[in-house]
Image (cartoon, rainbow, N blue to C red; front, side):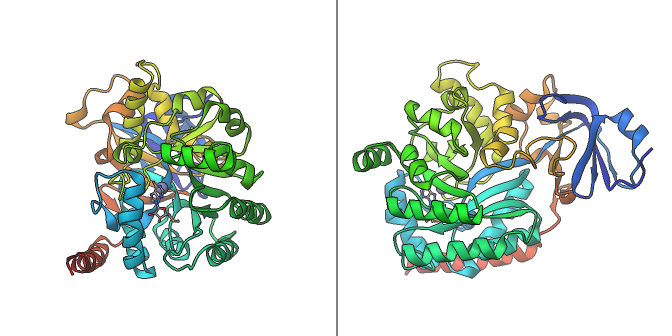
Length: 442
Ligand SMILES: CSC[C@H]1O[C@@H](n2cnc3c(O)ncnc32)[C@H](O)[C@@H]1O
Ligand SMILES: [Zn+2]
């Protein structure tokens, strides 16, 4: 009997997302030193391990923490400020001007903490972000305990903190150098905004920098039909092929891929590429529905994201999982198009592959980081539970969250975010909101 492990987390079900372990009934997960050391039937775990910290499992399910593959954290402060327009109008007429006026390091500190609060309380344990002042976001992530890939924005146009390409590129490289190897939970990355805001030779420069730094890239790709038309006309090939050709052999996390073309799929599947599907944002901006089932069938790694809270308007991954499971049935005119298990995988195992962290997260198995969530399956409003995967996709939501753990440390317990001072956060959000509202009235 091995005693003294940090934590044992039990569940009526442990949904491992691991191919051989599958779903374990009456199971438990053993956590030590930030990692999972064993997963199995609870009776075996209690026979083999002891801990002073045992989280009981009656009426609960344990699963991998959710992975949000595409966010713009501090856009939480623009929630609901510009609804019901299409992407280019939304960006150019509203969002870019708002960002020019309001985005400062203090704005980012408040907005990013608000985003982390929301993600922690809705079961996300890892996210991939692309927003201004990533060094400020990194401090927030460091202290709130989440895991993140934080990508420094690069764009050819003036934007908060930058004149244009040269200084945004230099700042991105400096950010990666500053944060690489500093915190196990934080992977610094580079974020050329999109093929329509970053010139082809600049994409090539980012690719070179990313290779030199061994850093991943996050980029918006093929989000709208306008982008497909514009890039195809300018470059003679569609946006994803264009970006991957220019960026070269480097890990690329491509947000949206709504207009991914079938003849791009083989390249997407063979490159170090992941497509992040953002169903709510794509629906709200009327961009379209990404060909997720076709990409999966072609072997492309696909993850799931919310996008920023200004185009969603929240960061709740349970909504994305359910919406993905529903809209692909409609798109493909088939109820079996995206089964519950596949939808769950987009936010866990497949999502981890799409962002290049499949060796650390996305499954509950020995050797993986101890990033997991425990949800109630005993709420009267959602009884009974006949099929746990169906329950997690179509019925469960953030209200069911009981515990959330990242790298072996609890960040959420019984309705409380343990790593963020909620009262102080609310005061800071109120101050920024008032200043935005005042400026908009003037
Ligand atoms: C360069 S930092 C990120 C930049 O992207 C903007 N943005 C937010 N959502 C989207 C989207 O869906 N497509 C393209 N660009 C988006 C954000 O406002 C920042 O300016
Ligand atoms: Zn985005």
